Image: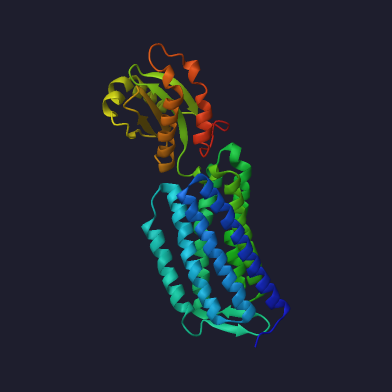
Length: 362
């Protein structure tokens, strides 16, 4: 029989609040993904959608003292967490760690099995549904693995952030601590003192919401780890003349020298190798040159970065195309470099996701 008490109201309210916060997180991240047509952030938003469903089922299960609803709640959660894992891996290195995702799936299989095995839940009058035994232990292991992976990403992002983003990533790190260690500790204590479960629900969701707000406010945060872009240069390939330059970070002396040598050879190399207008890469010890060429015009865009990425390659292709469309009337004969200064507007529009490290000279 359903019993209404303070503990039950607190548990239902905290789980419901968690569901609302996750829905807000989904709406913010989904709207950004739709605006930018960013498939990666769609994946990120999917996690918060599935998490919100988990919390709604969880709150309802406690309200009606229903073990079945509590068991069903785990299904959207074990779908949502891999979405977050894949998102973090793809923004860091554009590939999913087989080991990391395999461990997660094994834990989720065990969790799913124990959830639907009799004896893992008990109905506590004036409280709600409480997971016990092997199920409780597996949930704690699952939670720790989940949140530690999340925290490691946010910590590295905080550590490598440029000066212009430090205030935001401080907020991100604070939210991450709430989302991870505080929540996991509270949930573990909730095994013995039930009120800590409700507190853990709130800190977990607040931490998640902080992440969403930070990324929504400035999506450059996502791109701190995958790469560090140094320089964008537009070159006239016949003579190797630089038409336009934009820096996001200061190149080391050795990279400057190598870069200069590459540009000196641009007339002999790029014009022959890039007839089809495809992106090519030249790898150096400390950097990668991404090159976009157009076979109809003697102009190539060169981007110096620590690592190649889909977002940079796509941006470079778009920039080169728009640069040619806007300035093609100035090609040929004697080049007046001052005519191409307006290309800075294209950089700000197309590469708005690239962090700027010039202030702290990292």
